[in-house]
Length: 156
Image (cartoon, rainbow, N blue to C red):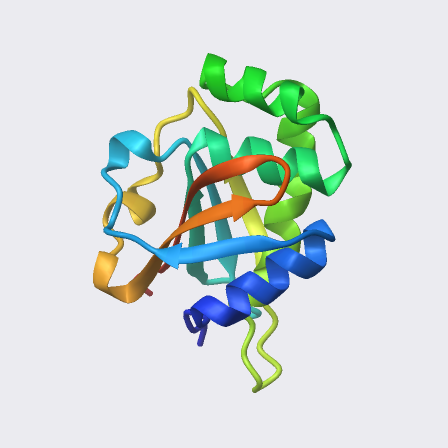
């Protein structure tokens, strides 16, 4: 069974992945209007178990930092409220690596099952996810910018 990681675990994973400092703080649950991209994860038995939801800013800044793309490219995506193809691919890799946030110590491997990018509608399993079963964060990536990241457990 997947679990929601602590704020510190999220921070350390992002810092390691992006090879730069990140500042992570808890925030109120963002409205669905702020959520633009979604990564859905499945457990080893194939059931959908967790999701990463974020705004375009989080996706753009982490996708850019992941491959050392200049901030101005990420800023352009944020201004357009849409990731370009290269940032979308990079952010897909970020989502893939973030699967480890939901892995458990009982050898239950969690893997990325699906990705949704604008203009795709949010999947029902994400819309129906209980905010109390998650963690809502503002993440600032050093040298890039800040965005929103929400982690959710999905109903089995």
